[in-house]
Image (cartoon, rainbow, N blue to C red; front, side, top):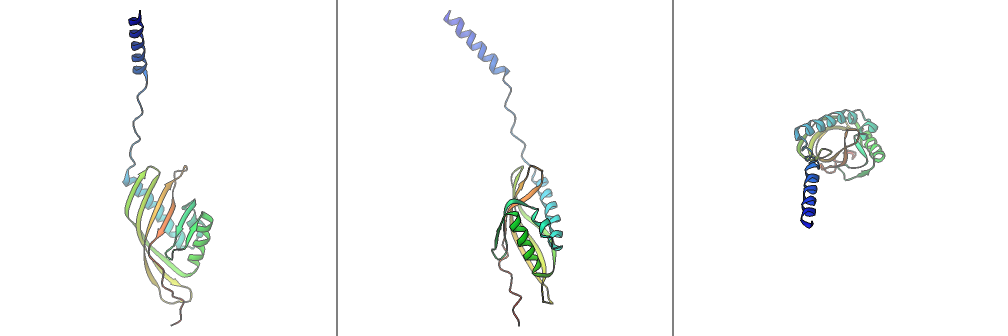
Length: 170
């Protein structure tokens, strides 16, 4: 009697295991080339916002709680602060033209997180000055893809260093 109960238990457990669905396969790894293309497209649309001195549009490329560290180490936290900082930063220019931005290194952490190390150039004429200066700006971004499917910057560090003081009289 004991033996038939054990056999029935083993047969029952075997049937249960056989009927249990297999674990789903792990999600496919994101395609780095596709992520790079998406991020390059975002960067390309950010450039005109800065050139147009449109701080609100520029800030919309950041998450609500983002951190933006400017070349002079000014640190702005939150989209509102980034918008106000962008307006102040770009209003100090008489004119600015931005060159292309290049992603030098991409690290794809997941389908919704990535880190880029990039560089771009900025030609600036400060208010009251007649000559322009070219600034080459290396920077790093931590990107997050939101529920809306849009990539936004959660953390950016600009590494150019302090811009030269062009307000001093010569």
